[in-house]
Image (cartoon, rainbow, N blue to C red; front, side, top):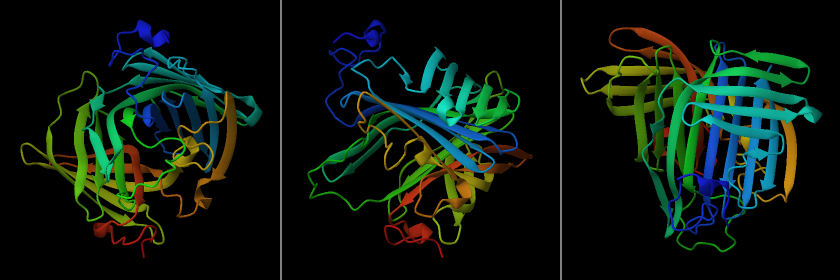
Length: 365
């Protein structure tokens, strides 16, 4: 079937763009977050394309006055990947790798927005993610991240929030490849490993540069994927290459969420950059579909379905593991101390020896 995508030079196989390479778990996803300089307003969005199961879904979430408001949409996309509108949520790629626009129109639940993301750093390609469970490929993913500024407005119930480039910055990422989506495989895998996932992902914004750190560990604490970079703002001075990195966390009692954290990066010249994280509150990734019991990524809801829910972030229990902690950042270099902002995304499930976790869901003492 020929679709709009076939008019772009994007083909990776002899097939039309509508068809994947054959794995039903293939996906193609956008993620965004944004926050003001005081760290009191936060929003996030996601849009996912699942060609093999013919589903496209999206979500938008905004946190105001401690309440997280979540809008969801899902549709059967009928093989057309470039119609990036899912119910109340629409994404427009104004200029690839530079300018993207999100519009939200859900007046029934009092959530509307018109937001433009403009890149402030170049896009950074993260190292390839590959992970098997027995013989099954569970992850084979390419990811990129990019920091930017936001402009526009958000309406939450009867409150309108002005979003200006000088006050709002954030991050977007793109990822595509293979990871579990939609309904699980009904046939057990006798060689599957017990589930374990240790994931930190932290894009940071400073006045003249961005920084990025992520880590995947196995249960023993051995890293199977990690990355640390600093990236200049567009037109800014070159930044040092980081050759070593590490992280440590102190956990909130009774949870698997960071009370504080530190990331250390070492430059080629042997200088140490120490990033000290001060988490303020948590954004719950369920609000944009990650692990949501109803609106999980790639689930089929028919031709078109929409939904809404909300919660107080302070009321969410420790079982809600997947978060982005809104953080103030203090960066200590050999020459100066620099203040910035960012998130520390955390998904820590199963054992992790360095953290003291031995079981699937034991919590910090």
